[in-house]
Length: 410
Image (cartoon, rainbow, N blue to C red; front, side, top):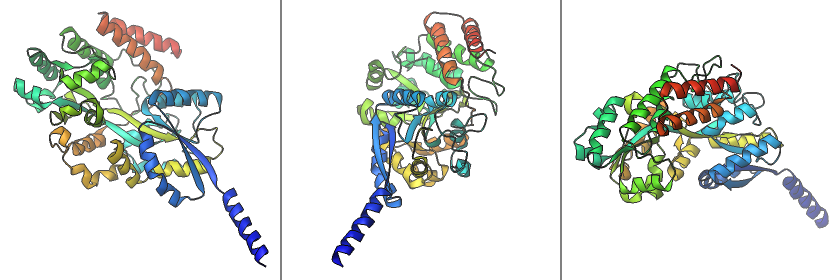
């Protein structure tokens, strides 16, 4: 009898072990810090699923993912994708359409800020990922430089003209307005976009690189460069970090996430010297964001979908990411949490999270086009010609338009 009982228990244990589903999740830093923290909660809900965490640096992760999706093997069952790569995966495929059964992701649409939902949705209705965090665009400014010239931040951001005038005042004190004039152009081309239209393409797929929106963006950036108001420093360079530490630039256009980087490693010694505001000219833009998708090559899509839902549709999980890695939640319901009213010491006690939430709620959705990544590269080259080589705005943008039209046979 005892022998029979032991055999029965072993069979039960073996069956339980056999029913354990193993999946993997591919992440870039620092998302891994958050996911590792919350996985025990997922395990409580789904003890039958075992999750392996794979982590790489930002570019290594995305380059590896591009290769894995192209070859049809090697991708994790769940993958994190930054907004800058969404268009590429829309164009090249490789991610499951979560709008289709059995996923039916449309049931979650109302949980997210509109623009984040649309960022991972194609023009033909495919939902290639779900948003987990967003990056409402803001302007960070040095309070000490503002005081030095006796300027008011609301007047500075009233228009691009007033912003440039502030730069002229700063120049008299040996301070640059911004690190790179190109970031101004990047902000402007992402604003005031008609419903249904994308950044680089119209609703019917026509390239827009020589439209009035792009001409305005390039012209304003050109003015800043020609007047010597930018430091001509590229983002994520050692010179960029040093400019923040030394205070040689007075403003920076960025996602809300920049304050976290400044505080923790870029320039912690500048605590209390910074403030946050809307971008000049009433510009409302998204400046980053992360998503989770499921590669079509995954053999465990049911279990993978459970993990995607856990990481994206649970307010407490998104708030944990906000607390631990400063990843701004994509779910508006979280904005009522008391932590949004907390004063931020690094920003001189400003309740900046309320500003971030307000901006997030006003950013409009923008259609994703398969050609966005190519068009962005071509526009970047055109801006390089305008800012660094003195090529006329219309000349550079007309050539950029021609290149995109030829690439997509328009």
